[in-house]
Image 1 (tube, one colour):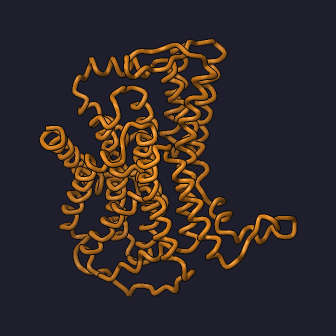
Image 2: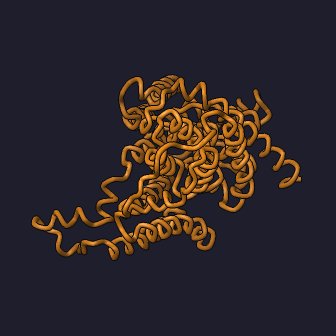
Image 3: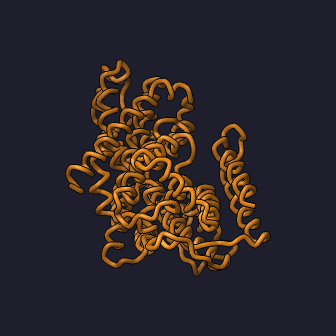
Length: 443
């Protein structure tokens, strides 16, 4: 039966990886794979186990208990992401991200490269790398009219956004997963991964700044825009502050991060309703006031969140949980440790692998495979590698995929022009991580 389980997982995984070729959304194979795996386990009465991290052994359990356990862990991540996505959409409702365009004064391509890279690095650490990429490419489209030049900028934004997401517990879904699973603490993650992430961003940007594409000034005048809402900048700073507040809330209360995110959402939503031009009350929701409901910033924002992404995470995380419950990941980790005793090599291969296949299941699998304690350097290195490795191919990260869609970037153009820069940055950051870990932090 284990062979059938592995075949179902591989076929599902391939369908996810080849979603662009198959022209189906990756949530479909993810959900189908998850349901089939658990159905096979239930129908064939396969034994399921819970991993005892302290004793490093498998303990038998019941399918209902283990499925509920994994659903609870998955729901923590999904509810957290729902809260973060809604806050970002509320900021966008008030056109808050237009405030960032006001920071752009220079016409020098080299200065713009550094400005956009730094903005991508900082923004992605707060609102996640996917959203940061969307925001900055939207601004790029207004600032730079020449498409070829814009493609170069978009490629560098992808590298910077992925580097920025790796060091923050709220910057990338994989680091969020490690944080919620209590594998890393916010402070230790920043301490171990911030410097390598900066190196990963700075080295490619420094090399690229010497290219012909970033010499001279951009053509044309900047478009002057009238703000759509006078509360745009207020909602931007309030929303970003509310998201940054979540790690502090977890540190103080020791409650799961989604609780803090729900509090932040409640605060941001309250101000959004107060600032909204249309006053909306739940007491007057009836057939005649449907139109009013659409003017509520909270309702409008909730209708725009990426539900397909949430369902994809549900499917893939519970599919990996099925393999973990059967003890497969535990045995695979033991075999891997025997074959490659150096975990640094394993983690760097995971980073390279995340450029080819989705980093969410890779990190979910690593959480099930390794039993190291909280804030072990292994988890910090996984956070770095999985977060930044995806930049090596344009389909290797959510930021790359969304940039590909927005700018119609060709896969092979990115592979020839940007991929090697991402690889150099990844390796430079990995070396700096190992040196920092061995010579300073754990000396």
